[in-house]
Length: 158
Image (cartoon, rainbow, N blue to C red; front, side, top):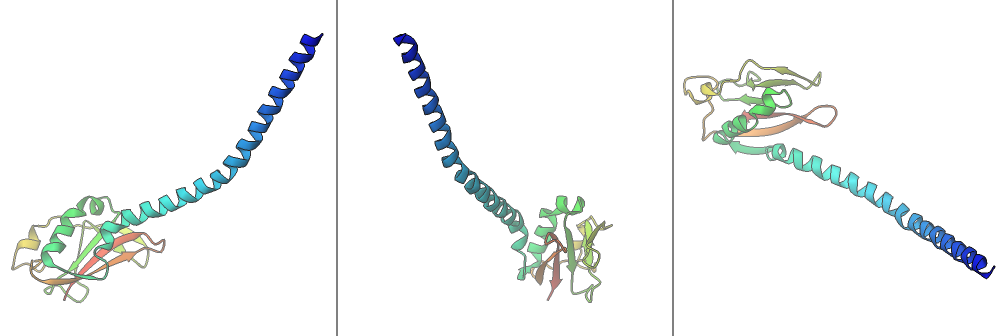
């Protein structure tokens, strides 16, 4: 009979230890879940900032014409996929008559449309209105839609 009592006591002690460990685990990992959620939110915000950083380089800055041409080449894939519009207004096509490359962004309606201008060869021809003077200076501005997403970069020659 002492063997049965001893086995029952061992079983009860083991059960008590298991329940105690489960209680400790719940108390330890519950606050860690909240901390993990906060860390995930911070990580998402940082990722969004880094994603936008390649565009924010151009926000409210003055850049040269050669940098404008480089931006047109750099963001060609985003323009063709209609996620980013690139607007260039040179001294010859000023007063709002600039050119949208790859895609056009309409801020009033928050919409992107495909642009017929996808060839950059005119940007190198001095006699063309779309010519971008490599040493010319351009004001660059980033435009966002109503959701806060960067949708266009505008370059206007000074």
